[in-house]
Every structure is written in C-alpha cells, then in structure tokens.
Length: 233
Image 1 (tube, rainbow, N blue to C red):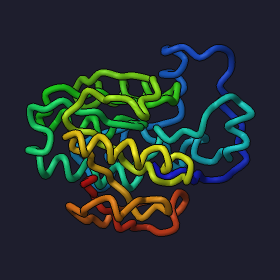
Image 2 (image 1 turned 90 degrees about the vertical axis):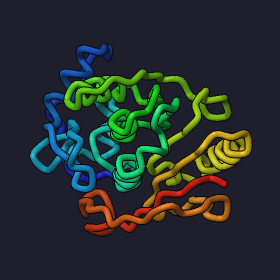
Image 3 (image 1 turned 90 degrees about the horizontal axis):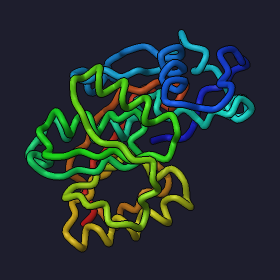
Image 4 (image 1 turned 60 degrees about the vertical axis):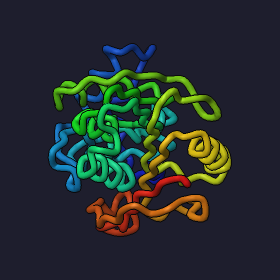
C-alpha cells in the first residue's frame, strides 16, 4: 500500500484510552463509510473519503492522537490491481491456502475468498487492521483468519502469498525482496500488485497483467495509476 496521506487540520474524533476491538470498530464506523473500490466494484469496504475527518488529518496529527497512519481506510492502487487479478483469474487461488500479507482493509483477502481459495489468512501489524477486516468480511459475506504477527522471514504456511503495494520504502523492500524470492524458490507462488513504487525489484519478477486503476489525487500523484501484477520468479 502506498504510504502518502492527505493533509489537513482536523482533530475531531480522536482515539482516546486503551484500544480494544470494540473501540477500534467504533472508530472505523465513525470515520468511514461502505463504498466499492472503483476497480473492484464487486467488493465493498469501509473507506474514508473527503466527507470524513480521518481523510484530512496529517500523519503528525495521527501520531498525536495515538493512531497509526490509517492505510486500512483506503483502497490503494496495488491492492485494487491485485484483487482484480485474483477475481479475474480464480484458478490462481482456487482450493489453495493463501496469505494476504500487509492486508490493511482485507481487500485482497476478500477477493481470494470470493475466488474460491481453500483457506485465507490475512496478516497486518496495524492494530486497527483486524477490526477493519472483520467489518469488511461482514460486508462481503466472507470469512478469513487474521494475524497481527510480523511474518517477514518466516514460513507463511501458504501455497500463495499475495501482497498489494508493499515496495514503497527502501528498508521494508530490503527485507521483503529476499523473503519473497526465497519463498518463490521453495515453491510458494508470490504475487505482488504495484503501481510503480520506487523500490519494486522488477528484475526478480515477471509481469502477469497491467491495469489502469482509478485513484484519488489526494493520495497519489495522478487520478489513474498504471498498476502491474507481478510474480516472483
């Protein structure tokens, strides 16, 4: 997922006190609305937009109220492209065990469930991601398991690993590239959705599909991002 966020001054609706599943869910309900990402209209997610104060907070303001950057509240281009590919090519996951790495909202995990995956697990270390995923599971009538563990470098215990928009940071990319390459060499199918992030290791991958994904200029540098689905080879 991309890691640039819109800017603004609002401080309303701050997260206060100890985070619980109930308080996380209440916060998400108050700051998002159900909407269909433009490139995967079959799926509905709890997303923030210009009507919500969450949209207009700076990263500094989010830190001040104890909220990590809310990547789970937006349908990033890489995730939309990867979800589209999975829905259009269900044989990629049908009947298989799947890990959606850095799931955020659960978008790609939901697509894998809809495509007939045998078992889907979604991983994200963001404390709000599980609540967002549970709400989005209910909105789409699917179920997958969740983990907040940092899985980088570990055996994902899955036949397919899906990762949407994860090569935005040099340090993170330096950890993911050898992990993904090692998994691919051991037989795991590793698919990545990416709209041209700076640290994407193209030399280690082969392109499978290209999409033009509508996004918002408040999050990206264009209204449409050319997004490629890659397979580690």
